[in-house]
Image: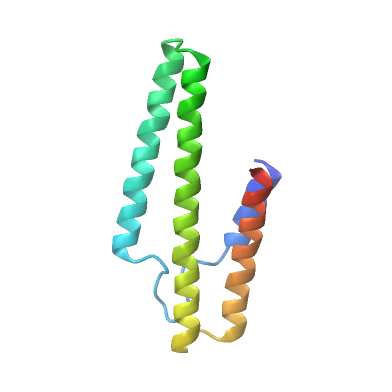
Length: 118
């Protein structure tokens, strides 16, 4: 396990639910994320087949770039969902200011890790 993976896991520890007891992911957004991940998994599988078929490296790299872009979009939408949830919890009074600040700190650490990897 890499150091950045550990940093990400540490930053996300304890973020499953806000203080109002609801998950930050709605059922519809969870389904959308799972569909998006399934498409990405299918794309990765196709890259594996390209390798098995000894496709040209430039074709494989082009597909790898597409997967990286899809993962970046996935991460961006996930960050957007978390920020919306955090702001909603804070503005509705469900969450104490220090809890919202803690959530934003965790998110900031994860974003810093992601940006270091790009």
